Image (cartoon, rainbow, N blue to C red):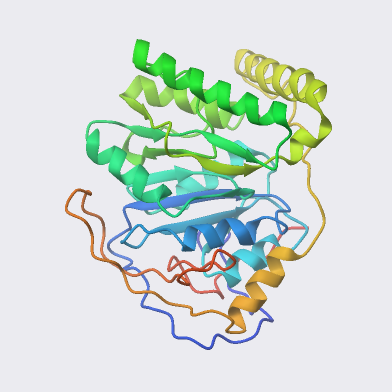
Length: 330
């Protein structure tokens, strides 16, 4: 048992297609994608599907951290074939800490369960590390999906400003936890006394102390705009200034959680479970051989990765079998 990882039989239809051999356990993958998840059954299926559709040619690990969910989050992740670990203490820093500790990759890729990725996203990260071999991290922007106009303008201005400041000063002033990859060798851990901001501002502060952080404005992720449904005033006053900026400042100053985590916004629905059930019922092919690696990319660990070709509605990974899952905590 590793970090709460246990085996459980899932009541899902059997696979109709063979699964390629798993990554050699003695040779870890180059990339480990860590996804914290609390009651994310409505979004997780699409997130994992877009990871399975990546054009990155080599195997990579996907870890979903069940942060004490009460829905089918863990079962959806396990049915997709990814590694599932449990972090019973609620909190995004706690979940990212647990997932990063469990990861085997040389480079950790941080993202979120309500986020999807264009097919070239991971290859873009790999290319950025190849262009900047001395960099300790590569970050990029995120764009809201189906956002109100002010939300679209907000993300465009924010990350445009980050890119401009980087070009002028050489420093990155902000990163999104939905889109940052860093070398495990320089990672000193997440400060689990922090809430919002701890997995972004504090991580960025530590990484820039270790070396160069690259910001690639062209390699964006697409994230849910569910919190924006509360309106502009709520997001500016409550989300940004109260929970994020004030919470980060107070919690870091007093070295304890003075302000707690912002309330989660979740919608009910079983779209994620339906996606995985259709997948396991054989609606799409289950495997894909590794693609030839271009000479411009850096070398990666050997292995294989399962992925349904051409379908954004399914997801698999060769990180582990679909039966390796820890039970969701109540």
